Length: 334
Picture 1 (cartoon, rainbow, N blue to C red):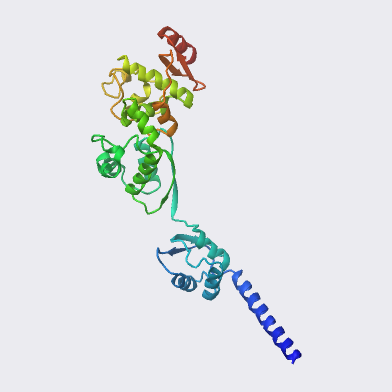
Picture 2 (picture 1 turned 90 degrees about the horizontal axis):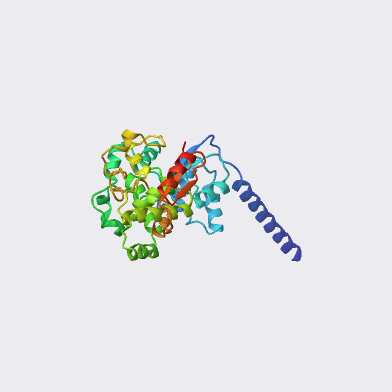
């Protein structure tokens, strides 16, 4: 009797061992297809449907092994929707790939501090998110998004320059221009904390004026410390009815890469010419990052009235008097 029990248990153990070995073998055996193939998991699709299509398209050799592996890991409901570009891999690797959502339907969009709406249009054209630059620029207007974002409600008819927060974004390949803009506006809203909004109001400023100032700082000054000093100078100039005289606002409408302005350019009659017109330009001249925004809000008062960027190093040089400023021009710009 004991011998029979021993033989029976040994047989069962042997069978389980064979099954285990078969399972491991099948789990680590690659499917038969070659190269790269696309596979789409539709949102809401159940495991049995996904595994059947994987089998039909020769991504796996056994639907049973694929499903058992996910069930043993309790991940049968964890497959992520998306478009996958798959190379030959074993069942375990494939299952893990689908669970962790390593999809190929997202692209990276990098939008850096100071870049403009025009720059964004070029990026989206390059990424094939849009096909027409003019249509995008016509669409990227405050009025098209005002109902969804409180920080836009007091802005008159204008484009979204200044509100598109610089960052690195992951977006779907089939995203629309509206999807991209909303993602950037959502990010801006998250960065604009209640504390920042309260401080702006307490200073008697508007968010739009802060963004105009921050966009100037972003283009003209490198470090946050210098941004705060430059902001203090420019806010004080506005209080005393002194022209801001910043090159960056005029360069915004002129374009090009020339770092200096010609006499003819300085004579351009435009509200963006802060040599001719007092106060801030009519809109931000780019999209500032959080350092420039904070510098515009928490500006630093000083005895300085002038600044410039050194030609070679880009260092910001400050001056208390116009005579000192002229000396700095001779020393650092010529």
